[in-house]
Image 1 (cartoon, rainbow, N blue to C red):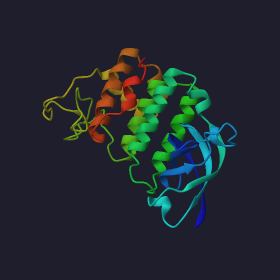
Image 2: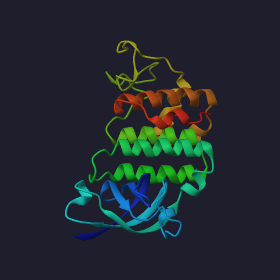
Image 3: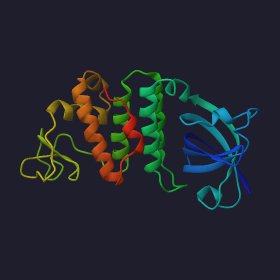
Image 4: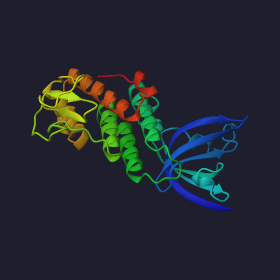
Length: 249
């Protein structure tokens, strides 16, 4: 038996029995962890409100043997709030739906419980902080997070050079199955022809060029979101349920 402490983001919660919940967190040291929080649904619970989606928390777990890596579920015995991002996200529909898609993406990319995923964790913390601050359009923050999540998991798309032969860009075609922008010679069936402004926007979101991203037109943001969604669905092998509710610019 052992106590273990880590900080993490609450991804989702599930009811368990009459007063308990199963909490799914993406933690700094252990990757994705599911744990039982007893009594948190009772009105007198001291830390139930801290274990809600979007919350950045410092959690103490009580585990027996190898429970933290999948054999049984550890208990959440203590929780302290690091940053209540949900306070500024859940009150705004655009932020809430974008944030929900970010949480779902983080969970999908960390399917193996107990496997460290520090880059994904840091991306999620930074993305939720930016979303809560409201300094950029929620859909742009979400698309930037999705693109960077793809990149840290080995699926970085190309928006300039040809993804197949490396021909320097700009290249006018985009193929989800080929890895992004492709030249005329490498074009495959199903390729689309997005505007050059859309590809510039997506490149800016991937690299963190917010001056360029914030100056984009709404039609290019919508087209870019469609490409990001299709590219993410291809690599996850099925789409995100939450994306259908996201408000576009």
